[in-house]
Image (cartoon, rainbow, N blue to C red; front, side):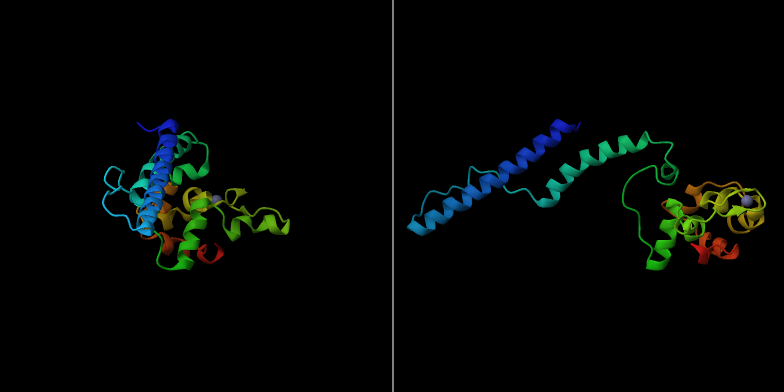
Length: 183
Ligand SMILES: [Zn+2]
């Protein structure tokens, strides 16, 4: 099991390898310079470790610690969208990828521009609450019939729509309700 001590040990080992390789290189250089042959210094030295292997060994405990910390932050609104840390696929179109990221983090021009202009937060006239991405995509009953049309149900979670595998009808839905170009 990896822990901080193991991580430090790994770094120390990585450093030792680098020192040994540098020493070997200097010895060989001196040998060549003095015309010596014969004794080979390489045999008893450890082999070089590929960078990819070292990266994996170092990153594994870091990700484990990071995940343990993230798993405790259940109140963080981003947690429900992405409970497991790691890289997600990128959309082929940059503009679409930006919109998707904004939906995932809950920051869009429509819901947050008032902060820049010192205006009042926009409110849903039907529910009398401030507009949020969560309200628009999940909560607001005004869009229930569109949810049923595009997602075949009206009770959804953010993870259903903008999780790692986003719903295939998400962009059709937000276009239909007029939110697409306000993101
Ligand atoms: Zn509403």
